[in-house]
Image 1 (cartoon, rainbow, N blue to C red):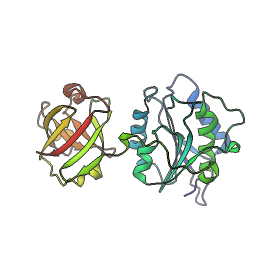
Image 2 (tube, one colour):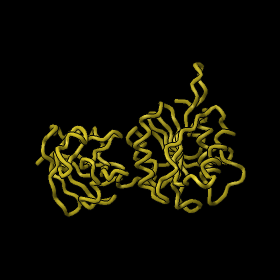
Image 3 (cartoon, rainbow, N blue to C red):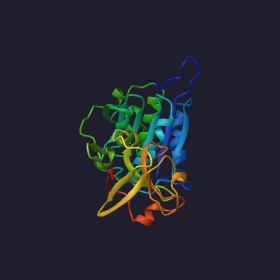
Length: 275
């Protein structure tokens, strides 16, 4: 993989995700730094409206979006409450992409699904801005490093390889002969409850559509029906389980807020099995 401009004119792509919002200039500053280092790169905003300090939400939005990007893309994710502290800046190289950001778990779910090859701690000062603020590594470390990688610098040149990177509990669901154990990864604006169980993992359970599914959410047990899409649910009172458009299994009602109705929050354990 390479981020260099190819003979066919393909430009490198950098995906940008932060919790910076849209009022302050932080996101624009990162884009300006990227442009100064790698002017041919195309920057695509994934989101700047991650709930502030919510690393898990950032991890979900990143993992949900990366499959739509071309091979060789570089992703910068900055939800970084530990900025300037002991947490490390890292680069993850996968089988198809590069991920740049803090070592707090935000990069791992997306990178892990692609297949992590190597992880490097960022220490090479020549790839950073000359003056590094203790409170804005997004602009001074992550943005320039991502731009250098997009323009062809090897992640190996960023610093030493590490193996003890943060691997959060929500990075991987588990499937066994009796069902799947996962957790609530995200609740979207429609109230759909999105688990960290990947569609591909769910298919290994060999359940059939319209089949009744037994769900355990925290201490609550309930039945749902495995459906193809929301409109397959017969009424607003019927709970459904479906394979979502971003690669994760969802729990939903038709035209109704499932999270409020079944009283779930992110991080709640979920068990899925055939009824």
